[in-house]
Amino acid sequence: DWNIKKNETHYRYLGSVTTNKNENLTLINSINYFGETSKRARSQVMVFQDNDKYIGYYYIPMIYDLPTKFENGFLYFINNEDNCENNYETKIDFKNGIPEKIFRKCKGKLGDLYEFQIDE
Image (cartoon, rainbow, N blue to C red; front, top):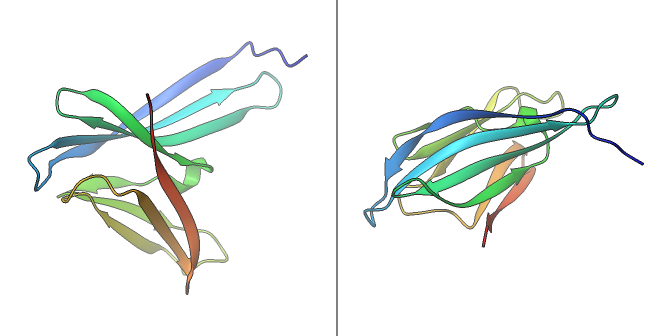
């Protein structure tokens, strides 16, 4: 019996952009911490459209892999892992809308792929 007595969520506003299709997108990092003796976390980038309507998310398995900023329509990831290229920055363009998939580069052709999940 796994009894959760502590559950807290932290949000971090990343930024907003008006796309080429005249949609307003807002991105927010979300980390949900849960568990009593062995804390765990679930992290994601939440996507809101127009009048702050929540439409979906990118699940990011590790909290330290979350993007660092969202400026001028670009979402930025900094890769600080030891086995990756030092401080490699991945830049994802949201100006044409929400990308179906995001590839966060690590080294060479290696990296992490995050798919956009629509909440219904």
